[in-house]
Image (cartoon, rainbow over all chains, first blue to last red; front, side, top):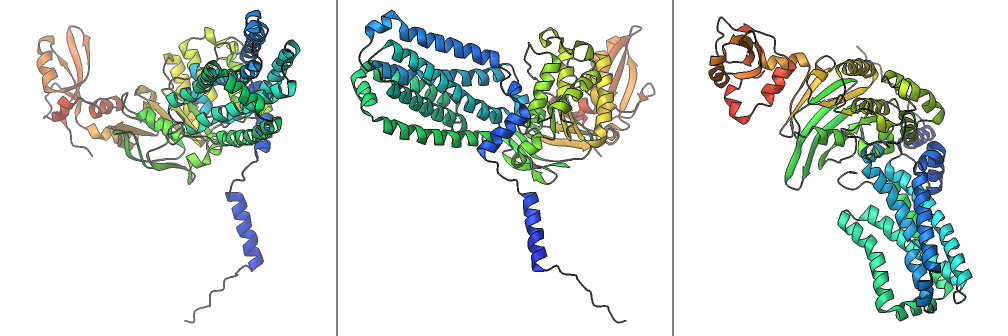
Amino acid sequence: MKKDKLYIDMPDDITIEKEINFIVEKGIKKEESFYLYMKNVYRQVGIKYLFHDASEIIFVTSLVLSLLIFLGLNRGFQMNIRAGSLYVFIMIVSPLLYLLISLVSFISTKEKGMYELEMTCKYSLYQLAAFRMFVFSIICILSNVALVSILVAKYDEINFLRALIISITSLFLFSTLFIYTIVALRSKLAKYIVIIGWIVINLILSVFSIDVYIKLLTSIPIAVYFIVTVAFMYIYLKKLKKLINFTSMRGVI
Amino acid sequence: MLSVNNVSKSYGKFVVLKDINLEFTNGIYGLLAPNGAGKTTLIKILATLLFPTQGEVLYEGKDIIKMDEDYRDVLGYLPQDFGYYKNYSPKKYLLYLAALKGVEQKIAKNKVPELLKIVGLEDVEDKKMKKFSGGMIQRVGIAQAMLNDPKILILDEPTAGLDPKERVRFRNLISELARDRIVILSTHIVSDLESVANEIILIKDGTIAYKDSIESICKILEDRVYETEVDFKDMERFRNQSFLLSERQGNGIMKVRFISNEEAMDTWNRVHPNLEDVFLYVYRDENMKGLDVHEY
């Protein structure tokens, strides 16, 4: 019996290329930009649920701001004030609000036992944290502007622009360090050391070598502060993006 | 299909799970093991809360860790101990979790009352959860696991705190849900699984001891489970000779259910082994190993 020759209808190169592109497009997940991601989270989760603990955040923000303003305007503080030491004060306290409101949300979720549940939702705790921390940094910039404005109004010896840029540089230096501890450090102790270290090192510097510290803060040109701030803002946003896909080697718990 | 391929989990030198291989298709799977056997570790690996030290878990052929939010999008999970915001009402709590699960607000607003009705909490949907009993909280937990209409529903000790009526309601609900999804129930309460599970997975010493239908698993003890009546004075001797499954008093005599390899006596009634018998047998103490029966 004569065998019929098997005919295969081979597609042409253009069709093959088209099909490959179609399969690749379907199979590979497109990486979203940070902006698009934030927009999607905002749209899908909504501001009401992104800041479900808004009352706690407002409480902590008001408390910290009131304390800092009270401290800044306190008579005892005024009497001990030395030229330039206000810049040291601004440098130390600027990231405190950011630290506290970020910690409040993490601690509250863990303490209430919501952590496991929130980590298995489509938008996990860390993904929401990235959005929240971005908003917290904006809240902190605004709070720092308010604090610096009050201090400038009270003390003639400080320059508004320098005080403000020190405050923002300090905020982004610290928040980059803070986010680094979340994504890169595994040990809880190491995380605490880094966070507490910021305050302790700054306090040691201000107690034991206040003159050197003041000189350092006042002699750095504002342009340098600006460059450092922009650089740390960039690293901070990169790290926030990393936080979206954060999982440690062992899992999330 | 969800497949667990050669999964091991260890913490330093302590091995919790050893080379686990499992496959799940639509239906109810009962994960049965005593506390500390590695049940919750396996559940947490399936929920991506823990990553395996070795091996992988695939859903529809894709690694669940790499799938990231796409996997969590099809997952419903009820942890053993789950938290809640005490000042939230169940409605507010479920709407919040629905938002985190990426359920559109319009759909969530219809879905939440529907789920609260299913779990029998529609009358208290606006009451604060801090006033709820353990059973009511557990029912909110069950409702939240179903918010995103998950393809994989993992429930760790779901019936803890539920009264008998609620348990029946839960079992009926799960049977209904399992028609088009994978339901994995982890429990050490055998009766929760007996009437609903398509397959039982028994974990022992970090490995899968058995994975089969209830009927097949019960064959392990076929023709070896008996019931009889024993005088109180003979009980001590009887206890030493047989592997007792249950004993209860009645009319001044002890009615016992036991496993025996010996030839049946006239007073012994052979009975069908049930899942609880197998559970007690598989997880018997080391000093009872002499009662090993031929396994199929």
